Length: 367
Image: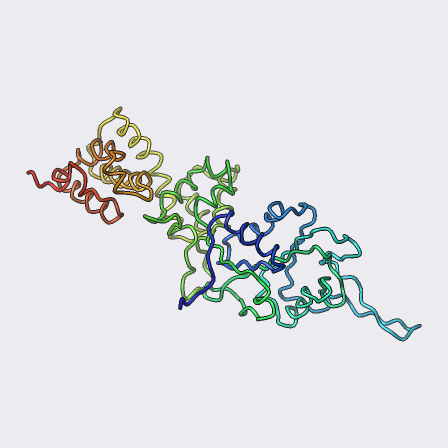
């Protein structure tokens, strides 16, 4: 059996499908994932797919709270010698908002104190009225719980059976594409977003520098997370983004860590010089540069382009000639040593250049 038996999703459509199924089966939706992966943002966007009005969405996080902050302060009534509780200000109460569909997000639920979590077990009650303590929530309440995982350096408890057993659970593992789709035009125009797409692993859209597991042991240092890349895009689009590459590196490192920042700023420099030149070479408008460093850089970029073009069927891409401009205008004109390096690098990335008619030239076998 798998060590982690929770299914994963990496597109919004997949999460929406599980959310609709949870709603239809009267379950909670439980979204797990790495810190900073965008779980909370994703949860808030489910309202539209579920037919819930945008103004009937409530995000609550009672991490570090006291029970009285959840269910209200206990107030004595001297006249009746009884006591009553004040209204909790952070919960949508049935008496205030009615019974129409409502989305409540219990953010980072599994990091809450157990005494606080237990107060929410009444969200499933025999009469169909969800309760927190004695307070009633709308009958049409749909509950989404988000949570980090212990293995990702998160302060998280293990989910308890009363909640997990009433939930549809899914792990959110975003891809560069799903993140870029969410960011929209800002990502489409961003060299930083282009870097993340370029740095994606061969055969996968999950990038090395996009949403990796946190370093272990984690000492509190920044590391790449989708949330921090989104913050970097916001800075890049603002007057706060400097022209000096060294300062760009410093800003990025403060958000995503030094290693990812170094890779990104190196790409930004590469993008300004090498990528436009490679495009001209592929169109037949320019020839390869003479500098060995630039030739290696262009060859590397060309291999990445070949990976993108090959998609899920590299053999068909080679056989169908889809990679011919890259092979004929970039790889073949390289010197013998670089040709062999390019052939090996492409093969390691899953591009079967040994099936191409120019295989012998690429491997220098006809010399």
